[in-house]
Length: 139
Image (cartoon, rainbow, N blue to C red):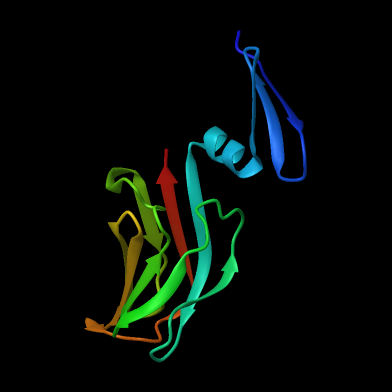
């Protein structure tokens, strides 16, 4: 039978002993290894031609700090170097921006995701108001 033993080394480091092998790692890496994926869960808002703002991080953010920028009307880019390495293992999900509003999110490359918003079929700004976003990046 495989046995796992853990112990806190410092406020952000943990010692893991698995089948007699001892390893030290960050608590964030331990959570990612146990869970099998990293997660970014937040509420986004956006007005005018400003970049989206993160109103709140919900739970653990183990992906990292995504920098949001304004791209074009109804288009916003989230950037974090190397955060989305494999297209087959990135699962972005976005909540609705409200009545008659369509929101979407997609991985563009290893460093970026794109959010789009539209109202009645026309690209539109100002449609994100505490809109939920979830990005899972699987190991």
